[in-house]
Amino acid sequence: MKSQNLAVCGGDPVRKTPFPAYKVLGSEEKEAVNQVLESAILSRFLGSWHPDFYGGPFVQKFEQDWAKSCNAEFAVSMNSNTSGLYSAIGAAGIQFGDEVIVSPYTMCASATAPLIFNGVPVFADIDPETHCITAETIRSKISARTKAIIVVHLFGQVADMEPIMKLANEYGLIVIEDCAQAPFAKYNGKNVGTIGHMGVFSLNYHKHIHTGEGGVVTTNDEQLADRLQLIRNHAEAVVEKKGVQNLINMIGFNFRMGEMEAAIGIEQLKKGPQLIRERVDNVKVIEAGLSALPGLLMPADINGMDNVFYVHSLRYDANITGVSRDKVVTALKAELPVTDLREGEGPLVGQGYVRPLYFMPIFQTPHLIFGKQSAIAKAVKSCQVSYQIGCCPQSEHAHFSSLITHELMRPGMTKNDLSDVVLAFHKVWENLSSLKSLVI
Image (cartoon, rainbow, N blue to C red; front, side, top):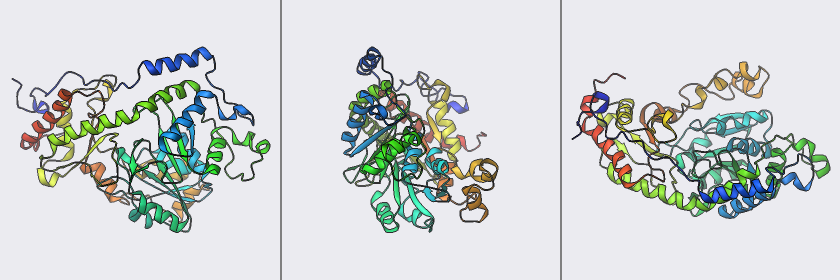
């Protein structure tokens, strides 16, 4: 029988055998890749006004399939979600000094994208239950310079979009949905990525479905789709012959997706709904086992707002347990093993997500990075925007005190695997008193 002492205190852990890897690639993807290899065409893009400006047959089919799956008019493939965000900001017409309201609690590209076109990110705080920005937090940040909003559906939880869109329409703002962590999610029956003016998706290797690296931008606006395609593929070399009249931000990049990635994406897209169902079902099992633990709150379950669980986000209250969040996470990690193929990351349990982005040097000392004459440096110097520590208290509280995340609900986890996760939490909670004196 295993010792009931916590592993962090010298006892035996709940489990030593690694959890199974998250493997969603199979024979279908192998066959699709072989078709591309046999064609000998790994990419068909040309950076000039030519029929191949739009890429090869697999890229174009993938875009058509993605648009259909989202009920969107257009889908434009990219080589990453980051590239999609950059392209969306450019397509929205953001220029020098234009402000874009963003979340401080997200992967950095979701907030730094405006800087690519000399825009100025403005941080709106998050809702403590959903960890997404809201119409209420956005409204207080709107100024005469505001041109757009980037809404991140974080952790798989959909943001409350109806009041955000109402606010955006009131002020004439472009809304870009960052759906990197929430593919296939819906808000009041409508697919994310089609509620705002553009939606950006990730196909990075640790997302719900993936092509290794890759991204997609959806829109129902033909002009925005056209601008996204131009920015993706050397716009400056194309606009003259294509007869483009609106030249704002018409300098392009090489954000193109290859035929092999597109072929994999076609097959991955078919698997998406089932993989989401498995995540949701696994979370139900875990939450049934954790719901009675004092001081631990499950993710918000809000009618009409899906959660497709990129990670399982838990809110922790140290005032109830008398033990800090960091000590609890340290104890949990000691009880659980690594996951196959991600051994170097340790047990996939985390305290917080990312430090609020305004802590980064890019916001604390923008004049050193972009120069004193840059839009962001001027905005900070004139106090038009503030990146002071403490400006988004809910984000800071989540990161430094209350948020616990884990990835141990992914497809591939068996009932026994899920049971071990629950056992680890219970073991830690049964021994909370022994953590009070723990030094970490």
